[in-house]
Image (cartoon, rainbow, N blue to C red; front, side, top):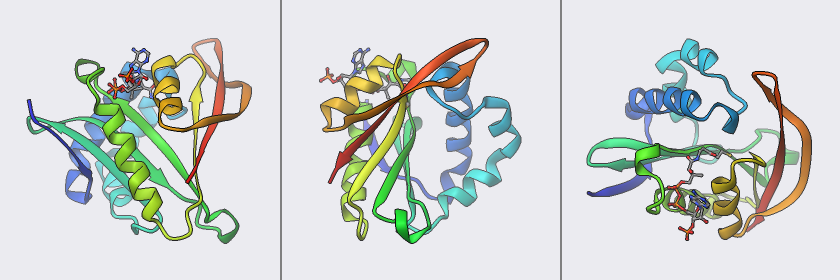
Length: 169
Ligand SMILES: CC(C)(COP(=O)(O)OP(=O)(O)OC[C@H]1O[C@@H](n2cnc3c(N)ncnc32)[C@H](O)[C@@H]1OP(=O)(O)O)[C@@H](O)C(=O)NCCC(=O)NCCS
């Protein structure tokens, strides 16, 4: 099996849309976004997102034998006072591709990109406290919990807390 991790371009919008819909269906409590809402946004939304300027945003994909099996995104606020921060979104690896380094490879690519972004000082993210694989992955790559938000997310009548985590570059 060959693994390739690379930055996605607008030409990858169809594959990213399919992965994102699958991620939201498979792991709904891992994300604040909802499957039906993103399905309604459709491929054009993702094509536009993948075309954002590279000093503002980038999305990385993991390909195994030509299939997109994982993703992670970065974006930064466009206001000058928050320009030093980059946010991680959408980290997900397909269940059949987990636990052989794909998530670590995606996060390493995102961190390398963030380090090269002008004036970027901190990488931040929020993660459901119950997503233990994700929390461990982030901790193992230098992220620390800066606070825990109770009742950050409700899904099907259940309340979930979120850790806010950051890595100083
Ligand atoms: C979190 C996730 C992306 C990890 O992807 P992955 O490809 O399986 O991760 P890797 O194989 O690169 O593992 C990297 C590290 O993550 C942690 N990890 C991964 N799977 C784990 C598991 N089942 N239990 C505990 N820790 C785990 C370990 O620290 C691991 O390092 P190690 O192999 O040296 O022990 C994947 O489990 C996933 O998509 N989860 C659901 C979505 C989610 O929670 N996203 C986070 C949104 S904020």
